[in-house]
Every structure is written in C-alpha cells, then in structure tokens.
Length: 314
Image (cartoon, rainbow, N blue to C red):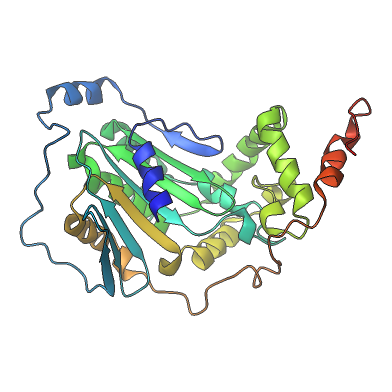
C-alpha cells in the first residue's frame, strides 16, 4: 500500500508521461491563471465538509503518524488517502488486473481496457468526457501493466468531485461501443510498431516472454494483432465484469480529508459494487507460477539468436 501512495505522490508532480498509457490534458492557460489567482498555500489544510455521512465500513486503519487512512468497505473495496494539502490533489483508481492474469482468450485485454479509458460511459459520451477533461485543466491518464490497470488524475482540490466522477464512470460504468473498438484496431498496430522500434521497450518484452514461458509474467503486455482482430465489445465487457470487482480495486487520493473522500467514493457508486462470488486467480486463468525456469544465459542467447553478429553468452 505504501508503494501505491508513493506512486500517487509522484503523480502529484504532474510528471505523467507513461510509456504504455493514455494521457489526457495538461496544465493549460485557463488552469495556469487559476493557479496564479488561488490563495491556497501548501501548508493550508482543507477543512472537512460538514455533516458527512459515511457508508458502513468494515475496517479503517490509520498509520502511526496519522497521515494515511485505509477504509475497507463491506464489499471489499479499499479507500486510501494521505493528508498532504497543496495546490493540487491526486486521485486514482487501481485495479488488480493485468497481462499476468490473462489467458489465451483474453491476452492483451488489459491494454485494450486502458486504451478505452475516458470514452463512452453510462452517463457521458466520449465527446462529453473529453470536454470535461479539458475544462478541468489538470491531467488525467490511464495505464496498464502486468499486475495493475491504473486510472489517475491530478487536479485542483475543488475539482476533485468532477475528476472522481470521470474516474468512476470509466472504471465502473464503461460503454464499450463497436466504433471505439474499431478505432483501436487502427491505432494499436502503430503502437506495436513503435514499441518494436525502441530497444528500451522491446527488450523487456522479449525478456519476459522467454524467461516466463508458462504465461503470467511472460504474457504480452500489449495486445497481439490476432487478439486485437478477435476482440469484440461483448468480450471486452465480459473481461470488465470479471476483473473490475470491488475486492480487486483500490481508490486512493493524496491531499484530501479521508472522510470527505470516502463520502465522494460512496456517492459515485464504489460502495454499491457487488463482490464477485469467486475471485479469479492465476490457476483460474489456466496459468502456473511466475518462476523463471530457464537459465539466464539460455534466454539471453535466444533473444540475440536472430542476430548472427551478436556474441553468444557462455
């Protein structure tokens, strides 16, 4: 959990470039003017809202210094906050899903869900979502990895309700439309070509693929072309229902009063999620452990095997 908060704290600096993520918005002229005119200082604390009614919580843990609070709702969803008031507030939704959990039928789906972020949802069209993001003037992004799908925002404190509304809709209530999947079929091949053209992104993928041949950490981080062509709105919606469950989700913030944050999460539907009857596991995905079974020199030689001029490691 400390790693999660550190990630959110770094995110507050607005250095949001992700190698494999979708980033929306930057600090524009309107937001810059608002920043200049704001009277909030880094040392000023934000007072909690009056008469906050909190949902029934299973447990609430507080760190020794009183700065970090972790509330677990009855449905298993965890809400984490750290008091660190400043000009900006960071908020994010983290899903315990990713390429290590995928099987042959869902390979690359975490990557596709990342690319479908902040598009159509039950409450907003794709155009409306983008208009809200531009109006916020901060930064909102999504990113997928082998073990997590992340949706994050850094905005002014008074804009947190709007940002959380966007995050809730894209994670809890997405509408995966056929035309948006068709857009992915055009965009993802270019992304794959870009990754393959850069050694710093291509080599880690090949290392994982060869070292972990039983799946899990060896599964492709990006969606293969064959899987991209087979993906449908229905299959992606089924993936969402399977993995975006409350016991696999964490909603975190830096720079908010915890009780206020819990109330906002409840208002946006996080407390209403129904936990899954049986949580999916690596075994359920037809995969074994993450152990690397191949000697290092063997898989390094395999990676360089296509280059006849590359030296063989002994």
